[in-house]
Length: 276
Image (cartoon, rainbow, N blue to C red; front, side, top):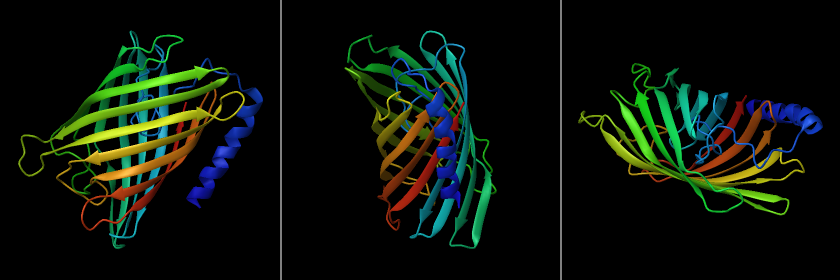
């Protein structure tokens, strides 16, 4: 029923968007599940216009057979466009897990504050990629008793994002990639960890007014020492559709996850996000 509801929601918004769609200058750039402008997971180097506020809500539902569990998270983001090609995003999420199937945990996850600075914007009418610096701080607001926290003391991520939006005749393709290094609880021997995140993807408008877009992503997490139920190393392939106009952005996607940790089989995830 959850998947059917997402599909109905998509087509509910599709009809009015087609009636009042106006062609964007190039590509509408909504936020991703971290609150940064980009695809679903991949972060682009571009930023929101100054004094622009965007609120996003998402659902990520994963199902695994070995080990047997379902995990659903509900991220909520608030993003702000700053001057001089800078962007700020605040993210929190509610997590629900059902394991094996008699063990259930639910609660608030940790809070993330992210900053992005587009230090080398893509030149107008040129294909040279833009470059941005990304820094994220992770604060321990999660529920430790329920086990829905990701850090005990603090965490951080830092990295770079590359991207180019290529225009030829009436066609557009956007290419994005980011790489980040993550650290958590470095001063605590029992919970310290470090790993890398790599994401890359492209977006192609598939409708006349570019308001319906197709996106494809590759996502990788590697080097993680602490492995929880849904928190280990993986390679994944994500694809989806995005509907955009001046008032809202709706994205629906599916992710196939190849897990590299011993004892974990592959799983799949359904993703949906709405931002205004």
